Image 1 (tube, rainbow, N blue to C red):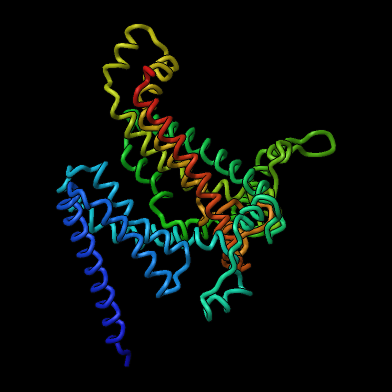
Image 2 (image 1 turned 90 degrees about the vertical axis):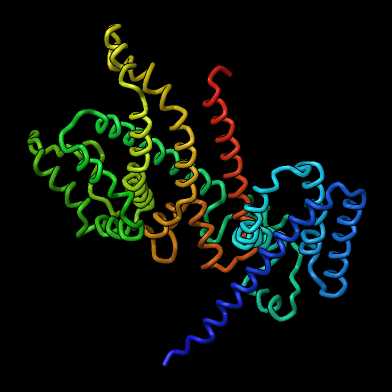
Length: 406
């Protein structure tokens, strides 16, 4: 008989600790709002930070990164309450304070621990010593230099994989936007059974990725897969006799039966096809919602002035959907850039194939198949910085879209 008592006690213990954390945060907010005007407020908080750092280092032998982070926290909080809030926004802060516990546990702690690993030397050889003694060698920027200069365990350089990642992102984003916008324009017309069409077209996005990608993986089987078989069928149906031979249209265009799983170029093409199929419905729904928000009177007035369909699309549709499509495009770019699911499931079962990996799939392999923990942490930081730059571009472009006069 299964004993559920230990598991239940562990859950209750976790809930108790979370409750203590929430209570501590709420009490800290109350005290900071109560004493932020006091002349001794800043000196006390700075002394509290120094005391916390001293205790952690002297009595618990904590690492310097932990000492600095927890020691600086009271100082940063005091400066925030003293010079940023200045006693304002009390009610919103009380509502937001409990979420700090969740954000810290789910985001801040893993992020800080990842940064800690990135500047130390931890792999399968040093893991045992770290568990036994708590000691780990400081590596400085060595892991970052290895990421940027040396080849990974997959024998591909960081720059090669980065170039492939941007190619993967660009190809997918182009087809997501063009096909999504095209389908949205069609669905925005007065059609019979348009609700059924929308339901069918949104299915790729609604189906769980695991099921969809594994189904697609079977269709790319070199012998029994639907993709190669349909290529053969099209070539046989539309073949043209020419002299002593036969011209097959798809073969003439360079599209022919492929060894999808063993050829890196074909494998990369297959994962692009699958991800395009998965991503088009999202852009279609976003585009359709933006199109339906445009008043019909604009098009009626343009028609009375003799504007063609292309002129209406260029001068009415595109400018009015731009504020919606720019954030959706940036989000789609980040999601595609970080989409490890499709690459992992479509490639070899050990996490990828040389010639088809992107940054996140290669990172996954470095961490969980080659056990290069510190290297992988530095790798993740580099990817994070790339995405941070993309986010900065998103904010910049979004600001321009919101204020087109500038």
